[in-house]
Length: 387
Image 1 (cartoon, rainbow, N blue to C red):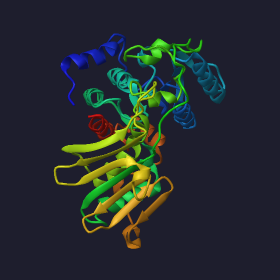
Image 2: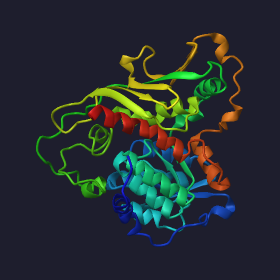
Image 3: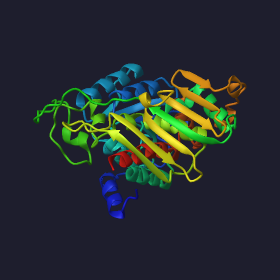
Image 4: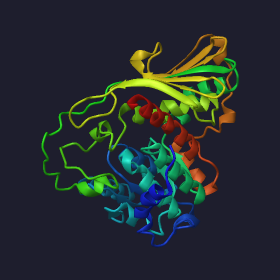
């Protein structure tokens, strides 16, 4: 799916409108070896990420940003307690944070629909970016974001943390090392389900601390129905359900293990979608992608696959490797014996890896292009299943 020039300009217009002073070099704290960060989106995973960065000795968190004033003040309090002062700035507009010349890098953990808009602006302003999955909300937005990252030489790390885990690395190294021969088929099992608590059938007043219009960003405005925190993911305007939540993790591992740099040439499948109410993302799904060399990649909610949630690579002879969070198996024990993961460039966790790469400018463990391709599997499946 290509993005027209007009669509691209519309997506980047909001970013360019606040282009004050690009930060092309490391911030004021850089000579001492410190990387100065700003946090955009400080609920849920945003708080988890912020706490992780706070505990790195060479990171200073200088500003937090959220359209929910309560969450923003809570995040500031956490930072100030950690730093032993009251210096952390609060900014309700991400554009203002990205425009600050004293910020080297940003952490991005907002709902899916705003990933590309904020990521493009951060890249334009010369910031390094640590961003949550999925890479972008649509394939077209992903293309625009990837182009901006390349153009501005942005250091980008996507939070596909499974890449930093030993058993995922061992599985990938075994498959890449030819232990099962040429990969003929990949099975990607994701969790199923996906509906939040009942939404209000009529508009209600948003919480006082929440700037509802700002939360919606660049998507068409709609009335508040009591759905915001976490459960936005079951509404296709803002998220993509379980498929979007997990494809950036298991989909990324699947492609990494098979060492695929190309896109599928065809896809087919079907999903089960709610027919009433606000929630409209797939609660069950199954689709198959075919690559130019005939390799098949099947994505389904785990209940439809023999091994359930996880990734299984199957070789042409029938040998296989399967990995999930907390488990690693193979069709024969010797497939996983004495596997060397050194060639993967595996490092000391994504947060540490990101900061090291900001300093060195070398590629991160989860670069933008890998994250874009993983997210694209979900976008392709979604288009296919919806017809």
